[in-house]
Image 1: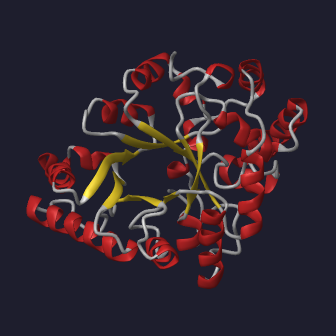
Image 2 (image 1 turned 90 degrees about the vertical axis):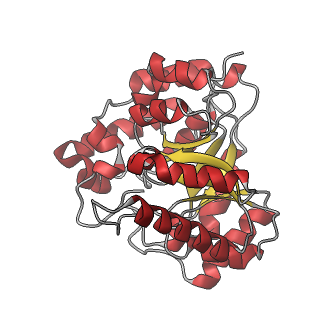
Length: 322
C-alpha cells in the first residue's frame, strides 16, 4: 500500500506535534499579542503532555522554547523534542570550515543544556543548504555525534519540493519537516510523491498547516498583508470552501485535510494558550477527510503563487518566516 494515498486507504493518521516557536518568540502574522509569559508557556507544555502529546517541535532559533521544554519536563524523556540546528546566520559568508563546525557544535551543546538532555532525540538542519555547504562538514559533524549516541535521528527542515528531493537523496536523512496546508499544491507533483514513496523509512512532519493562522478563519485583513489586493478574494474563497465542506469551520477543514494525506507522520501546530491547544486537540479527534472530500477541496481551492504559500517569501513589516 502506497504511503502517499489518502485517508480512506491509509494505515494510520498523523500524530499531533506541538510547535513551540509561538511560545519562544513573538511569531505569526495573525498573532499581535505575541508569545505567552513563562508561567503560561509552561502550563501549555505540561497540559499538552497531560493530554497525550508526546512530540514537541522546537529549534535553537526559537528564543526560549528549548529552555521552556527543558524546564517543563526536566529532561525526563517522557516526551520527545525534535530540535533544529542554529541557522548559523551570524557566520560570515566566507567563514571557514573550522568556524562553521565550531558554531554547529556549540549549537548542539546549547540545545542539550537547554533541553536538559544528554542525547538529542532528533536534530534537523534548520537550513537545507547546510547539508552540502562547507564541503558537507556540518553534516559529517552531525553524523559523528549520531554515531557516538549523542543524537538519535538526523533530518532537514525545508521549504520547497526541490529541497525535499535533495534531502531524500541522502540516505542518512531519516526525518524531514516541510510546510503543508490545504492550499499548498506543490507537494502533489508526481515526482515528489514518488520520491516520498521510495523512502518509507523517513518520518515526515509538516508545519504551516494553518499558514501562520491565516487558515484558522477567513479574515481578509491578514490575507491582504500577505496576498496584497487579492487577499480579500482569497479569504472569500476560503470561506466558501469551508461552508461547502460540511466541516465545522475553516480551521476544522484545514486540520482534517492534512490529516488525510497518507505521506504525513506528524502535524506540527503551535499555540499560545491552553484554549487553543484544547481546540486543536479536539479537532484532531474528528474524522479526517475521505479521498473524495480531498479531491473536492483541491478542485475548489484558490491556486496561489509560491510567494504566498511560502512564509519565507512574505514581504511584511515584521519577520514572520519559520
